[in-house]
Image (cartoon, rainbow, N blue to C red; front, top):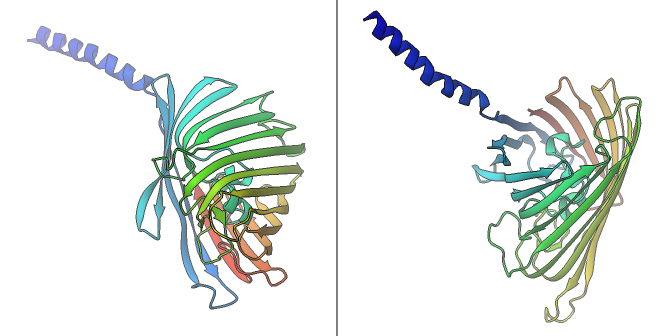
Length: 353
């Protein structure tokens, strides 16, 4: 009986060892998320309701599929529809340190601020031009990489061009590319003077563009990327530069989209453009308290010019948390924008992990 018990124990341990080894060899899974809540008030009570806001709620999972693919999946809660939506769904093949290929639903490499993670934004929202001209998330294929110890980064991709829609409409594609140079590389120190410059270029040919990727309008009642229908060719580009030193930071970016309308759209149709950018100056003390001011201007293809001064203060109590105050004022009688309005004040509480 004792021999049988010992034999059974040894067999059980022998079966458990491969399972334990397999469990130890299983690739780790990184789970993270982003929560942004706060309060929004207006100087003019007619400019939308005041009150509490749930600006962002995301959950992400990142890991490896065997030894070939990396995967990244992110879901986002949409307060307007009271439902979760797929925000990112990416499979990445790392071919070499200088090149990796990503396929799925992802953000194209275009623009500086447009490619920043929302948790890393200085203000509550991206600038008007970055929001309107940046292509947003798309379904497609993208290659990217870096060289010279991270000083030079680059990427290019081909996408359906119609946002999150999984089916390409009209067999027309969108192309984007970006190159960026950083004087230090991926690692910088507090006392370093860091100079960074980048440029982006995109092109699309649309035959029946739906709302969301056509001509940028100036209607403040629309969502940031809602646009007019557009048929024709679109070339969009951006240039940016950033300098930082001992807590000081100066950032500027200019974005432009030129529309060549297709013939036969009707009498009075003419080529047009949308352009704008921002200039931002900030200072962060002890890595925990930040003051920043931004000039934000945008001229939509349809509508009046919009210019704002935006003032902000951010507190970083820990690595994962952020509290922010923001106040916007319009210049020269500019009309309200989708994310900015004269006298708009906001308070943000953010947790990102």
